[in-house]
Length: 360
Image (tube, rainbow, N blue to C red):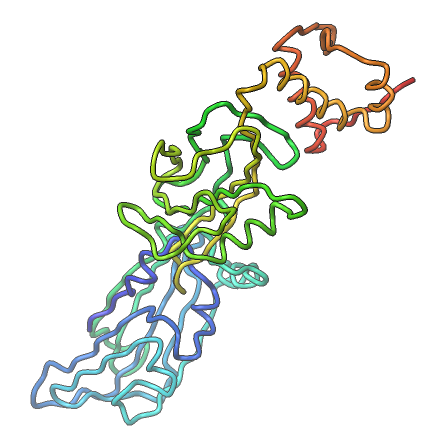
């Protein structure tokens, strides 16, 4: 007997439950089993199969047994190749119509019930053992073999988040580097698709991203891609790792005063092909070097105060104002530190971490 988990399942970063439970005998090949009667003159009779599934975290999950009283036989020298797509009506090449029954352990039943509503198998290492007996399931053990899968399963449903440049939508972040370093926190063994688009009047960031992602990447690692960039699409590239330095040549220059949106899409290898998971969308605006840094900072402060003060902002604006300092818990901040504290307050307000009450 020779049993192995298919590489598709063994190397997957995410195991789709659908491919395991409902492949309708036409999904990806998940396992291979070879049974061979090595005796060239004697038939092997009264054979039974047993399969057990364990995991590192749970222990024994499930036992699948061939029904007692319904054995099968192998003719002299006969070989039988079995996988999950050719075993719907019994073992291929075997005349006997065998059947199986199964039992969950207590923890296995809890595990199975907990899968309801999930689309992927929880991160763990799973072992599958196939055994063949003669006489009965409790009879003479002729062969046994174990294989495992799941060591590379992704722990988190997303597993990554953005770091730089820019910030969440609405942050009005201004950057000065014409060649920003796009960075995100995530697993280094996953491929990511980085998409950067230019802002368009009357079009949302989401709609611009949807249009860009609907086309193939224009550039692949170390080669040219098969896709093409839309007129507002600045960058669309597949990246191994957790960062990408915007190049100084071969791409469009980022224009001063222009707003850009970007996101990454992870390319996860699953038991059912490639699965894409999208990050949130971040934005940034290229600094206009024709304006002084003071002018740009004044614009940023005005936008932050407008979000914080709401209806009161117009009254403040008409009366004129200048930012002298920001006081937090008795500590006063001036100049650049005051602006930074305003940014932090604005971000916490957007995330719902603080509530701002405007008193007369």
